[in-house]
Length: 429
Ligand code: GLC
Image: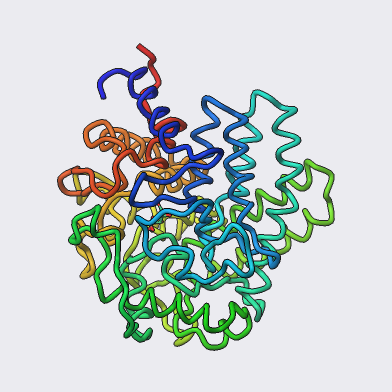
């Protein structure tokens, strides 16, 4: 990908090629439906060259929203047989059309909507789109606070590692071990597309399937699932993303004259900010997640800790300094940053999905936070590293931090989007 104009053109072609009529599949074959946090990132990519298509991406995503406010992690708009688990496995078609999964994903959307409205060239269109999205975003955020933090701790919980978006991160090894493996037969499809050494292990899948079946058997009853789910984790990364999004939602409400909702969201954000500060681990020198079944803190060293800046946690200067030193240490250890797990950590695997590889959209989120906190040099380093990975490896799903090799799906939508709005070379030659 030599010249800047060619880069952008190829990235646009990835989005256009993955467009299925107002929504974008993450990657043909491997992920043939609409994914929640992927679509948020992708909408910002569309925003660089087709604003009405960008807003449409979010409208289509919210077609999957349940009456409860849940915005599912997958919307199965049309059938496809290249992905497991598909709609019949989740068993939601009686309660929602189009069918969806029954779990959610990191709530990026409100932040992305704010970014889109601030970038919009067509202000009228943006205003109308935001006005339509606001009540839906509010219902989703209220759902998180009501169903995923029923005890009012300030931290929401995930019931499945897929909700974190970081499926097989070493951070989930301990809580996932408490989930019984399914005893039923099922056939994975992912390993037909990607080398199994680069995907989650079979033992992980056996537990992913058990959890999915448990939700269906519980009739998707939020109270029962909260009480009985064998996996229940307060994920630092997801909570930091929720904090930022809740602040951004409050701001959008203010701009649209919804002062009551703005105050409600600001108050929720304050609770969340206070609770997140409690996830700092002196031992790890990092923010960590917590298993709320056992009360244990999950000390695995993952890149999620660096979402603290993105979450705008207002931490002390001392914690900021330690986190920044940690970040620079991670970068210095590998030729291509930022690895998803610290290279010296016991769970690190350079090839295996969320156990080591670099993920471009995570680099962008972390860099966003770094830049906002005044750490411009570190943000620039991440941008540079992401650009060179994509330039050499193509629009792949994730990259080996030791060799720079691109892995997983090809023509990957959020990688192309990140290139378009963040790390493509500026100079159009
Ligand atoms: C994988 C990733 C998840 C992503 C999805 C679609 O499941 O772990 O974060 O949303 O693929 O790209």
